[in-house]
Image 1 (cartoon, rainbow, N blue to C red):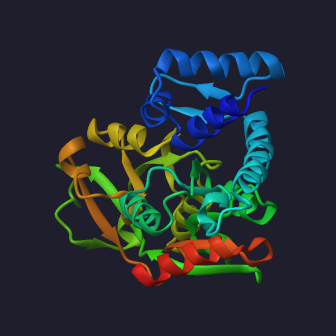
Image 2: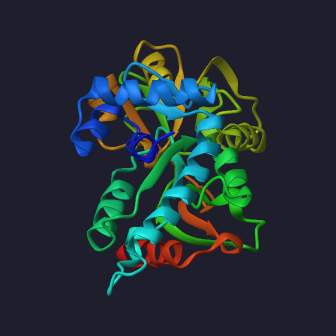
Length: 299
């Protein structure tokens, strides 16, 4: 097992792409793939889940990454222990960031890129996850920083939070729907609607909330379909299969044209659905605090 191969593994893991990693390592993609395959064969486990356009770490890959990063950090310290001025970023730990799928997270990527201007050697390991897994993963140490719904951290005293994105509930309807011309709707206006709902394990808060709001307004939500993601739900709306709930934070301004639908705001007095950047103070490091302070300052 060579240090060069371990460095290759870390680069692929943090870039989530063989193509991007090979470009930054200045080696061919087939050569990089061969090194990773040989490493997996040596370990006897798969380190990556390979899909057509993306790769993600397996559970074994996540465990291996933590150990490899520790080894490479120690080796780097040895290599530079007699330098007159050692850059603190050279030995920086990987920052593991979890974030919500389906949301418009362009601001997150922008902030991380700007943070890397002053911390060029800090690698980020990015992973999408469900709200519940993000909350649990932050407390367990699987993630160092997460971008998640505020409501999942209301009962935690150890989590430091900063509002990242204001977020409220919306309803997507076919363009010719009788209510689609409204600028804002009440839940009571939806009593006769048929809905397309996210599967509960994808976002239990949004499902439980809308079901509860229906009951509060005197009706049971009639669900026509259950879907795994926003794209599937809005595709069904576009062909007239029902109306779908979404968050404003998922709406980047292109969805109405893309799916030929109408999106209307729903009245709400709750701020629990806002998205926060959060870290667990029990796992705090100086680098993590620097990043969180930077995000707070720039928002």
